[in-house]
Length: 116
Length: 111
Picture 1 (spheres, rainbow over the protein chains, first blue to last red):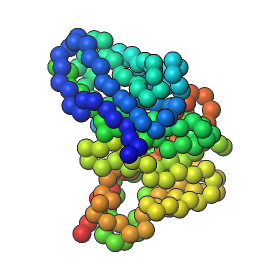
Picture 2: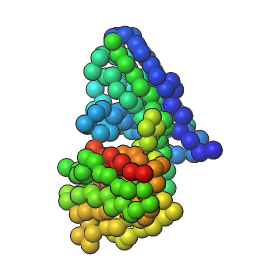
Picture 3: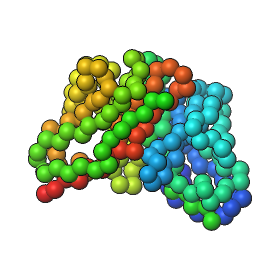
Picture 4: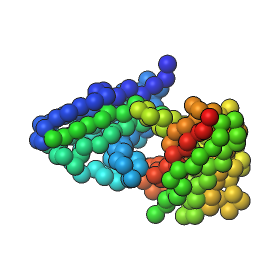
């Protein structure tokens, strides 16, 4: 089954303790992206990647890192989490074989992160 | 900057058609219009997308205004399982590779 898998689904941590949220897709998609979803603000893009070793900042990259060493994986790293990073996070992927903007996004089921 | 505007919430009776509007007056000539829906505790799910012409699939229809400044997602017969938040999104075709999300419309379906 074609899917985007995020782990963990829920994570509670303390300020400053490094964490990684994993994202993996099995559709051989070139494009992968991370979003955070906050009440009243909708989904905002954190980072995206066009392919292996190619990443770029989205709208809210501060406090986050990503890497794309393999096509299927795109982990989100919070080196020193803070309470304002408490949010619901989604990973998504899409093919870039068609024109930009013309491919549906496939989302994972989300990771709810709480930083105390 | 490109953006989409949707009503915060709408209600519909079960088995009646639903028309969900979206305004995207800042759309560029080549940006794609997507619709996704998000059920509770799930990630957004693709519904439909298009560029200029109206589009149909098994889930819904997408009607795009002639000037492309607005669009309407049409659910032909709403069911209780269609209760969700519906997002109108722009797939940008220039600049940063991104999709612009609005804040969505929460659809309530009444039995």
